[in-house]
Image 1 (spheres, rainbow, N blue to C red):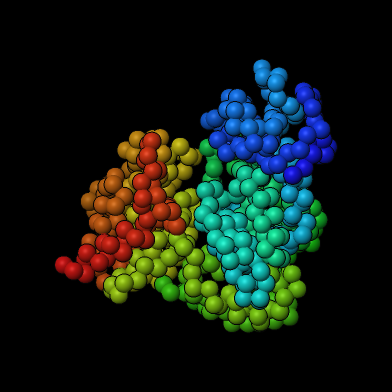
Image 2: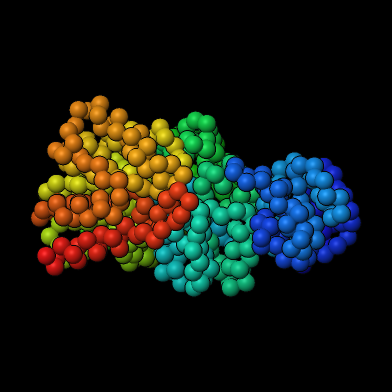
Length: 489
């Protein structure tokens, strides 16, 4: 509980109506979740405007409302600001008494690798005996309590609530994925990140950002928030721009340049990666149970981050080597078959290229890829992914991903120009199977010994978003069922 007058002190208020000397028992931005005595924050969304639900919030017991537009109802205490999203972040931090200040918080941003890198960091810290928290795409974790995640970076109110729970549970270190949306929309305001990690940047989210430059500028915000150390992938083409903006110490990692944490003598197979870790003081062999060159980068980011916190490199290495995998991230589905099946979240051109090139490095048979593109998202990447599918795989099966409000065949039609420009032939180089389950079944049915099937785009997701409904759908489970059916034939 907090007095509204005290809460308002942290906001840039334009106008108020009514009595501010009242107690607020909570904050909500969803009118359906308002409980008596709480403050309702009206967010102007991209599809729904919270201002349209103010009367519903009041009916549910809202004690006061925070708005950025003039409203007709003058019977409730009202605070007007210029931007309710940013005000929500500041009010939430104040309401929960700034829990982030009591935690060591590590933020990871980039196009690809955020989820795996946060998992690796969190797992290593756990292995070191620390009590940890995790906020990300797959799950939110507070100590030993696990909650599902609906977006990469939650709304600011939810983040602050998670941090408050972490503090209460005795968590000392929290790791979180920081999306470009979260940075652009102010969800991570009032968080003093102790470490900021950059993985890479490539085309994505151009349905939200106006250009790749705008996308980069959103990512850069993480590195201008304070003067704490920044852990940067020096091999990425945007590394120089990150370095220019970073205000704190720069800790570098990569495979190519002279960097603080470097991997060399890399050996990759379907079950993992071996490499030599080189630092200024040490040379250590690392045996990852994760495959792919991209996981070399992810592990370097994690090792560099934890080492920067003052922990022993040998113990960090032991923690990294104990990690068996991350759900939906180059996840091997092994039921004793004589060919490989891998499920991966790759849903961008760069991510798709990475996993296909990795598969080609160790496959002695064919590479078969099953992929689609999500609806209501960046359409420009669709033909690019079509071209990658038929150039980097021996056979491509074009299917649905999460069509959302779009017609699945319209999405596939946007993919096809990237295939057609290369004069690839249907039935020889690719086929179209709109139903994703049937597409996975077809891949398993046609696989020969030593082939690799890559099922990409959805990774850890256990649903498929189809128009006005969401159905249960898990790539890994569908693949297992297809393998079981094949073994019984």
